[in-house]
Length: 160
Image (cartoon, rainbow, N blue to C red; front, side, top):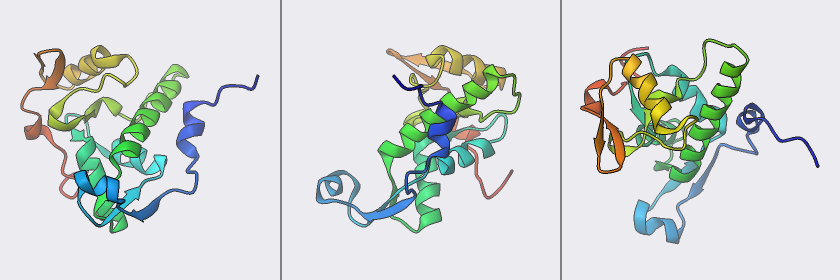
């Protein structure tokens, strides 16, 4: 039995990505026509690293930035979400080794400002980080959201 691949290794392995492809007929029912960029994992991580303290971004905004960067119609929803999780897990590996400046994955929300239960430590860990940065997290049914998250959205062109 081989050794388990570290999350950082998964993050660094671009597997021939990024790639821009035509939106398939199956995808077009939901996403329309045009092209989709399948990003490299490090591209998703690079955007996540740039989100300043106190600011937030959603996966959909990350997808838009990736599409713009590659001249595609959309950023792939599936791989962008998966690679955000890989970046989060890689950040936790670094934190476990004592590194202080890690990818601030807790600042990346699902659409509508929802917290991501798939991040390390689940919703509770993400909530703790967000509250330390001044955000208020509220419950709606069984899901957690950042209250008034749109007011804290990061605009990459305006501030770094």
